[in-house]
Image (cartoon, rainbow, N blue to C red; front, top):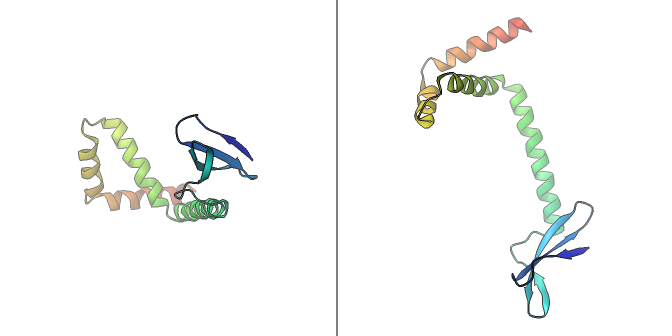
Length: 116
């Protein structure tokens, strides 16, 4: 375990464990006085890390099974860079509410399937 932190700021950080998790400690006139109540425990940090990993895996699976998401985003960026609108929010609102958009994406999906 190592301890480090700026002098006089009322806090220090303690780094420990194989994952190099850091916990903020409150400091007083006599040094470290205890953990910050808003800080996660090592077990909670491990659970959070596992949750983040599982969420990324689930998101990746979702995106791989829904190619239309990738097509929506890439075609939006392509149009945005071609047109370079002054007001991007207005452009995005128009782009994603265009009633022809579902058909455009459907046609792109068909093209990709034929090319594969």
